[in-house]
Image 1 (tube, rainbow, N blue to C red):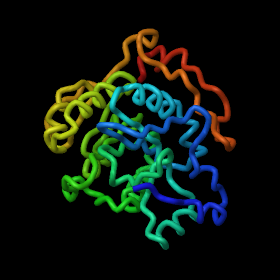
Image 2 (tube, rainbow, N blue to C red):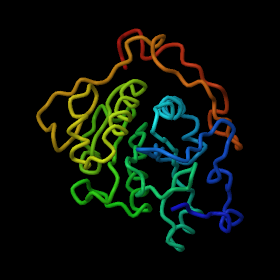
Image 3 (cartoon, one colour):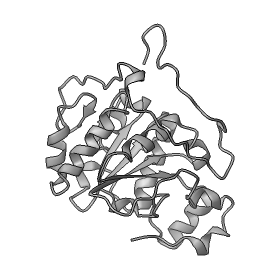
Length: 249
């Protein structure tokens, strides 16, 4: 189902952040597995995140896989969505989040945790993992905050801890090849990958975070999305190193 927002856009303060269709954005029509990468903050903040840009490019290069973006709505749009029973949607094809195979949240700071729960509520997806059946997508989380996944472990099906450029496309390929499997079967297929933490399967297991050993040998985004609106960090970002000289990652 594609959501038609046209009648509501003139009623909100920043309609451009719900429109999509930016230069270099990707709109796939067919896929075997798909995912919405959701940044739990407004568009201007989320599109300033380098990790979102990198994953958007590298994961959409996986054959048979589609990655779309999602961002938290401003208060005026959220009011319209709740009053008109419009579910939380993706930016590219305006697909309700509950229709994706996976909804992934980027956790960059703890203050965004409540925005994750709000997005799930807007999407009509039960908050707790234990309450979600096969009719709902897998909920994953990545980003810097996942080094301590405990606060969100009741709400997330699996975490990707560490660098995502290599492991996320690998998971995407597994999901494409096993699109007909149940959610539990898919989790079994990825449970032994570096960086993957599944709360209900890994209660006592030490997780080795995913690390890109050499940035020169990993995939990097080649097409910069050009937003129609001024974003918080309104510039081109080029990563020349990661972490610090003292080993912090």
